[in-house]
Image: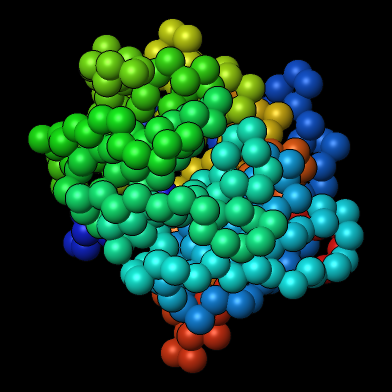
Amino acid sequence: MASEQIQRSQQSQQPLQQPLAVVSSSGGSAPGSSSEKINFKALHVREFSGHKKKVHSVAWNCTGKKLASGSIDQTARIWHVEPHGHSKNKDIELKGHSDSVDQLCWDPRHADLLATASGDKTVRLWDARTGKCSQQVELSGENINITFKPDGTHIAVGNRDDELTIIDVRKFKPLQKRKFAYEVNEIAWNSTGELFFLTTGNGGFGTAGTVEVLSYPSLQTLQTLIGHTAGCYCIAIDPTGRYFAVGSADALVSLWDASEMLCVRTFTKLEWPVRTISISHDGQYLASASEDLFIGIAEVETGRSVHQIPCRAAMNSVEWNPKYNLLAFAADKQVDKYQTDEGVFRIYGFESP
């Protein structure tokens, strides 16, 4: 989630009127849908506190048992989360960055390797078992995006200057760099690692948002997907490989067929620019959030809204657990004057409080 870059683009944005040509949020359940099996209203939210300032990013490891959080307090933390238990194990603090930890991601194939991107221009690799930094590299700008290639061999990093750097994980050195002439908001590989996506936009209304589809490793543009009337901010890859979703400043989320590169569905519940989205581990549900004071959960196959999680502030990051129906989320500055949620993130989906 490129929250800082998104915020620079939406200082004057207002809630949008929804267009007419959209999928209704009141359709029936799709065959095989698990919405009837999950009683969303009976599930609970748990709060996790430890950071001294607001949390920018949350991310689950590949086993779904550890969650990492990055904060503007210049630290990351690793939390042991028991999906079906009550215990809150002590978290591990990762110290070393000298600026905000804007985004982080786990090695998709190693449950204890975490990468962090910071405004201090460094990218660090951490061992979650010890809390120690094992590798670091200094890049040319303030880093706000980071993602692992699905096979764990490369890391992609985006900075405030719309420059992309690919890092070889084994040597922990840059393989290639490319600066783009347009605003790059979020980055992602597809599920096979053969394609690389950039969500782009010029930050204003009336400008079509695009998703640039690049070949990998050449980073040559293969397609430009135009599906929104304003800048595209965030992207989520369906873990099953069928789809990817894109959130935009036009307050819509579009769902794309990953093989045909065609938009198949639009989600319409939000009224503010979409900041962060995630697709559940089984591909059943899409979570999306903005400055609306709720997180929307909808069925991927129908677009039908199945639940809303109330919030007290705009969201910075939402992410589904890769194994369980747990959704972690972190908010921006709080609306209450006492800032009681400063440094807090939450996880929704527990069977007990």
